[in-house]
Picture 1 (cartoon, rainbow, N blue to C red):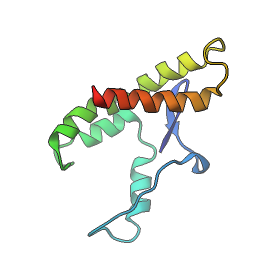
Picture 2: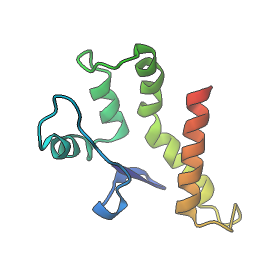
Picture 3: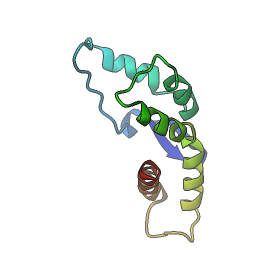
Length: 114
């Protein structure tokens, strides 16, 4: 719902969206669009505040405890990564936006597995 920039994340345009929402079980028709409206403009810190609420349940509480700090710091992390890849002398063979997505993805995976 967001896309990385040197200034941090910003709301993705329709063409930049990289997600699919499929509601299951007791979800009502239209819940997908309600979720997009509710979540798509939220910053990582806003998402953190919303998700840390006690009324947000997850299957494994340890996952919530582990992931929330990562969500909270996502914007700062993206800024750091994007700045490092936007320097022309570093990894000139890749487009900065493609490389940044690769680095953000691999960095997030590394953070999750530590």
